[in-house]
View 1: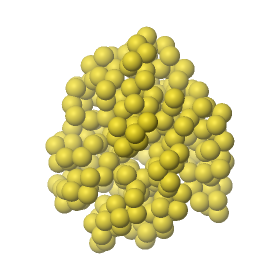
View 2 (view 1 turned 30 degrees about the vertical axis):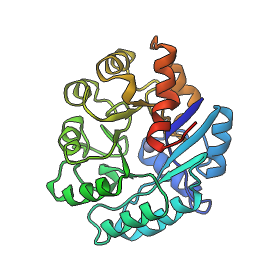
View 3 (view 1 turned 180 degrees about the vertical axis):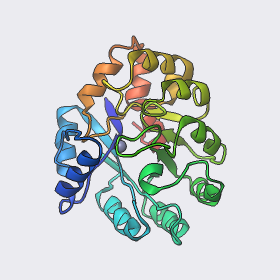
View 4 (view 1 turned 60 degrees about the vertical axis):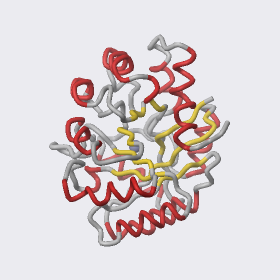
Length: 265
Ligand SMILES: [Zn+2]
């Protein structure tokens, strides 16, 4: 069984433009779905994925409410677990977090580069505190981002500082940080943080995948793809080369996710 902790989908109306824009700024990444929820579900079916976490990102204060309205509209906490998002420095970010919680979403996604902040900025402490009080899960984009120039807002070192300010689960996407193997090992492995496996295939050298898995623990790894940019089949190909026990594979592919999302079976 597979639960995919890192996917994206957009409202039907804006999906073609959103996909084209994201692909262009990232150097021409080839999308594997049309960017809609229907497209995501087709990909899930092909990849035998039982449930997906759909990560939404508010890239400005003005967009925040619409982004969360969309997340609420597609969320069913069965096969689609949509996460909300807040623009960290917007006036109503804390209220919007309450609305996210009240509408049954299980977490939020924050993307420091698309949202223009550093994860270890002290001014974010009240936001992280509110997230923790509400019991929400937080997914951070971590490491490099192909659409931006350095410096990056969520390096593993900055993430390690921010982690101290949370009391609810934090997920560092992309194996703890895209193209940051050494830094992930130095600053995050062994800490109370989850990594998702998204964008690993053909991007994360196998050496680091094995080392991070050994030093961190399969108990804190979550299967993720970053659909539409990678597919479930691609990320499974990488995992299948790591010599994992059946028990560990079960934890990574669905059991850890079931616990986090509160799915009973
Ligand atoms: Zn992503």
